[in-house]
Length: 246
Length: 152
Image (tube, rainbow over the protein chains, first blue to last red):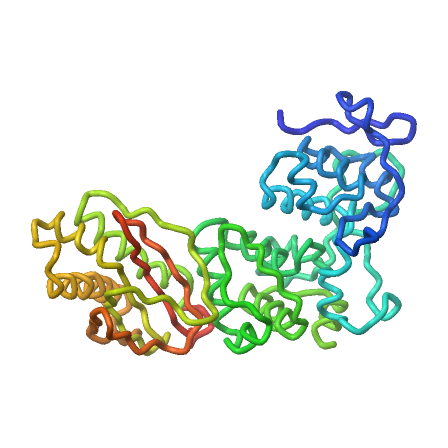
């Protein structure tokens, strides 16, 4: 557990003992004026972080998000590979501490024309509590079938992620581990989608090394989600069912 | 047909190189091609039917085939030998896949294509495995549709 750092409370703020100078987490922010998508802190980020133990790498990312930065800038400033930073940002997003950029959220894939009021209410991935409770586990929102219950713990309803495709890839990786079988599982899911849909979405290839392909086509994203659920035999909550039926 | 089944194609390819040189090829950056799948100078293509349909092929530049021939103590400049070699590579995979699946998967005899004679490719999304061997590229391309629910 050497790579974990205990988060302690200092004057109501989450803090690390070695970060006495930069522990202050400010209010949630929106998008930059130039339109470049950035991550935002959750409104209750302080409460969520207070009782968590975060890896120092996650903590570094969190502090950068607090500075209203996008993922590429965070990677540059931390001198870390972008893929690693994206992964850590996804973890923070899963923990409900930060929000992914609105422009590429899963819900916008599913509700491209709907305003925030029309979207399902996003339930917190963790209970929002101020009572000290070490390492609270994320609340499972998905409803797995008995035979797949152990494998579907990460299939949260809203699957928060920087990119919805990356979220799907994470689900597949959770099932298959890393390596060739995961790649082939991804391939099998892709082959179930008509090839023309990728062409229509302007996607010519997907490189496993960086996984940075962005899918902004709602129809394609819905098809991929549906096929992933089918092939991984994931049962999801009623809210996601409504999303997929939208 | 599932992920482990498809891995048979890749395992067979690796085995070919291991027998040839004692070393496994270096696997490059794998990718999925939604547009036109790759072909190089020489191609050995296997048509597949049954529990999956489409094709699997090896496609190689001149240079690595020449180096492979040199490793086999053959003339590295002989184009006919290069054509035979790419066919042998595809044929090795056929043998392994037949052992694995029997009649559940219909595997045709490999067809080979020389430079200037592009092979007919299936209209499929392709999984591309670059095999790094010497000074040039060899791609293993899997372009299949799956006809079952994944169980085999």
